[in-house]
Amino acid sequence: MVELAPSPVVQSAEIPLKPESKRENFVRAYRWMLLARTLDEKLAALYKAGGKISGGVFLGTGQEALSTALGVALRKGDVFAPLIRDLAGRLAFGEPVLDATRTYLGSRLGPMRGRDGNIHRGRIAEGQMAMISHLGAMISTTAGVLLARRMRGQTGTVGAISIGDGATSTGSTHEGLNTAAVEHLPLVAVIANNQYAYSTPTSRQFACEDLLDRAKGYGYEGHSVDGTDLEACLEVLQRAVDRAREGHGPQMVVARLLRLTGHGLHDDASYVDPKLKASPVGADCLRLAEKTLLERRWAEAKDLASWKAECVKEVDEAAAQAMRDPAPDPKLEDWSALNEPEMLDLGLATRG
Image: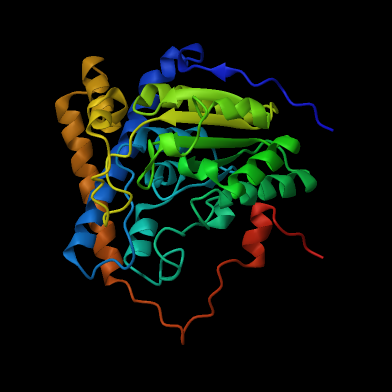
């Protein structure tokens, strides 16, 4: 039996980034956030235009700081299982903007070949897991990848999963978290406590004072972070990923924030308490990051405008390309979601 490490609650102030790298890390992360917000706005416009996008559109507005920080903390060779609001993390981890636009617009040239909806995309050989469900199913999947790698003798990689507060109430989440703890896997479980599971408030989801209370029960090291604060997210997520990579077992990060849109564009979020919107937890992480950049003189207003223009150009070009792409034709394709070489690259199969 593996003896698990203690489970302290680590506050962001205890784990600063190196001073000489702080500005560079912050600016880089901010630009991923900005690109994600710009792409989300483009997808929303295409959805509202009618007929451009099949299926729903789920925005990450308000959660970009947390998502980006996770994507930035990971490195090539790691495994990332994102959720429906993790566009920023996907981009920071290496997903091309064109992959996202092609998937939403049904291009046969996208990673899912124009099939299986717009949120289940991934490139498994590159460690970008295709989402099965946002209710905890990806925890066991990611734990399985990490266990397979261990059995193959692969070391030094981390698996990161993202879930919301609602998913913590599901059996699949419990099973996955428990398996990763028992096997002492290098898993980082990031919980975005955005105050609502669709329209169900946290008061009707769990009775513990803080979801972080569960870290110790599962045998995880626990980290708490203000999900609206990019600097804090960068510090805490990097710390959690480093701890997992160094062999300290699974890590749990709980972020406090508010989803600033409805569950999807089909939802007006009229159930959200106005007091939450006006509270610190309802702050827009992108605007707070911009304020930090200007106040610390890490950037000027003209820099922000230039970066925004670059993002708009990249997103517009990707959308235009995806709309020119051919639609899927089942008569012409030999299609499968996974094949043996991809599975081998990820460490899921063996030749024999």
